[in-house]
Amino acid sequence: MARIYLTREIPEGGIAMLEEEHELDVYRGDEPPAKQEIIEHVNDAEGLLCLLTDPIDREVLDAAPHLRAISTYAVGYDNIDVGEATRRGIPIGHTPGVLTETTADLAWALLMAAARRIPEGDDMVRRGDFKGWGPKVLLGSDVYGKTLGIIGAGRIGQAMARRAMGFDMDILYHSRTRKPSFEAECNARYVELDELLAAADYVTLHVPLTDDTYHLIGQAALAAMKDTAYLVNTARGECVDEAALVTALKNGDIAGAALDVFEHEPALTEGLASLDNVVLAPHAGSASIETRTEMAEIAASNLLVGLRGETPRYCVNPEALEQKTG
Image (cartoon, rainbow, N blue to C red; front, side, top):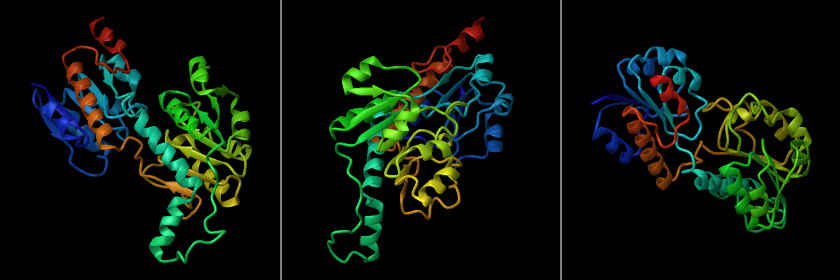
């Protein structure tokens, strides 16, 4: 029986799978544990189940001499020093695919909410300021028939395109590689980033956080967008220069934005929360009961398999086990 440290309490299905075979040490706080808290608890752990908010770097790994497997309750893994874990022969599991449609649902909801100013309308009604229908009350923007610009045509980006087809939108995309089958399925057109930014009525981000995508949307990109366009980000907060976004929203350089992730999460860049033309969600892309439950079960399964010395079904670094046996 191994000892497993969980940096947060996950849905019960995953917990039950783990405690059936191993001893669990679960952090019960609502907020992410401090790094020092993680360091103290991984000292004698053989398995680690973490979240995207947890920094699993060399310092943490140095504090975990018995660690044999890591599983992250997320698709992304930029919080983990993958190279160092691989060098130590520690496989890393993650949860791709399961949250594709759920996250695309949320991204589409944010797009619609920003375009039709739904949060502003909700606030108006709740304040008692709604005085009845009027020709100019909360005029928003149409979505049907407009142009959607998708940056990052992976699973979620393609799921967004399928939703856009129902709204008869022109679909442009920019990605590291061309996707001929995606182009054929969704009548999507590959363009360079500058062309996408200049042409799209709605720009939606679906890229991983890398050196190339850090502040991908900054002052220059925002200036290239239409002043009637909207930005939607459900990828990583650091992909957007939030200070530049605040300025663009204040100056009317773009019409609005909708964010589910933030550059300094959970903190907001000064001025962002006071703007009416931005919709803010609490990193809820995968937050459906069905998806979060399945994520828990996949994350638990990845960890159990890794602890058995086998390659997890969804493994970031399968070469780690070769390193261990090499």
